[in-house]
Image 1: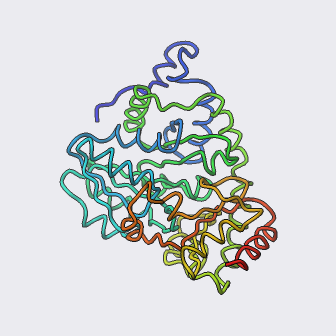
Image 2 (image 1 turned 135 degrees about the horizontal axis):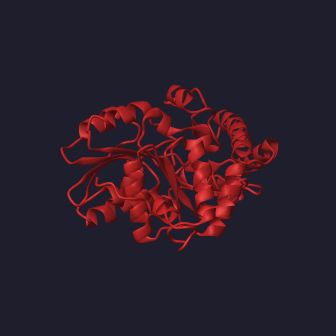
Length: 359
């Protein structure tokens, strides 16, 4: 990639700021704070998480390139890869999420991006980040990209484990209050940073100064919130695991999680995201999510308030993906995703208890 000066660097050659899409103090302050957490050479902030993902991929890819991505993953990332990237003549191979051997087997001469998501959405699968970065380095011209939204930089730092780029939807834990839509990407590679920065400047997925101000506010309370999310998440996961109406619980902090040992190596705690299956399937799942009172039935995640959703009819529903694709990714009709907030954990358990009593 030809090295181009980042717009932010160019602006510094001129005294003051000249145009907010190029650079402004609020966005630079938020980016600097996130970068200090990630340990990169630089961070860019975007108008959404998908803005960060799409800008990053399109800045690095060209017609004829190949991407290896996991499945399941965030539904809009999945549909963007299947539709948008294919429209630009970019080939995408989907492999079993977390399977390092599948990444190796999928390598082609034109592979340019190794894409990962951990913990993944919505099933909370864990990708071994060090092994993933090592596989990506088998292709000298390829770049490894990881969406670490479910963990936040407080619990997990992919750059420290050799990953080239880490992305977050800042709408979630980094913002933390359900009042902004934002995204970010961080990297340890100055050339990568420069190219993505220039592409962002040209295509315009830039965060507003006020949203950047709110994002910086969220970053300042991130440690306090993530500790409480993790404490509550563990207690609720343990409660659900012993409940007779729950079939399976997917939470990386539980010893029963298939990648628990990997999670222990690369995460400092396990966060507030839980997925679980109601034993009696679709109708039972619908009854549960519609019966909670303190917990809010809504998409999104990572906020101070607890949110519950039914992936098969909401985030990963028929408007996003075909039923056969959903089943292939292990997203059953009885699967429920719970974003545990920072409320009193006993109140949350009582709410789940009364809702499960109606199932």
